[in-house]
Amino acid sequence: MSTVTTGAPDLVGRTLTTVLGHEREFAAQLHALSHRGAVDEVEVAEEDLPRRRLRLTSRAGTTYALSLPRGARLADGSVLRLDGEGAVVVRTRAAGRLRLRPLDPGAALRLGFLAGHLHWVVELADDPDGGDLEVVLQAPVEEYLARLPELLDAGRVEWAAVGRP
Image (tube, rainbow, N blue to C red; front, side):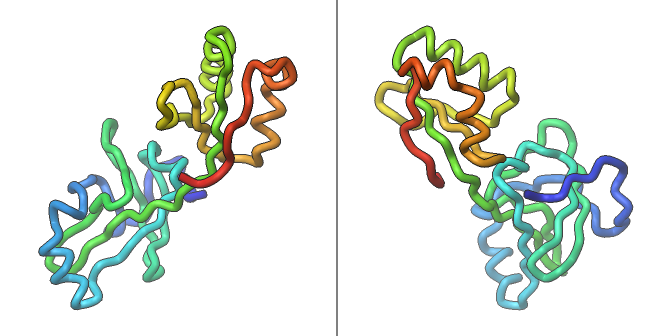
């Protein structure tokens, strides 16, 4: 997981404060900089993408403080710095997933309530029925399943898959 900072960044000159866009938008400039070895990458865990304040260490060993404004969104390929000297691009480390399948409407409501109440990072799974829920794992699978005993034991929810996206 990426390291989160709680106070004001103390790395003046190494603070990244904006998402300039996606690497597709800057392909020519990034290509030219890459020939000079001037494109650095920072790895951000998938579960940390919604955060606006992080301390990151790049592949080249440079430490950056990320301090983004409200509404800014990180994604794999986000460009955080781009100038004549170099660039910094985000790379995402994918988290494991737990796919949960409610077998009746009541179970779907209960599962959705629990996921929200427990602040799980979730997405609707790409399935034809549109009912599966994918939980981004930030802890062992057993910790998530331990929160659902009444739904799992009653056969109202089953876990359909565990894996990476």
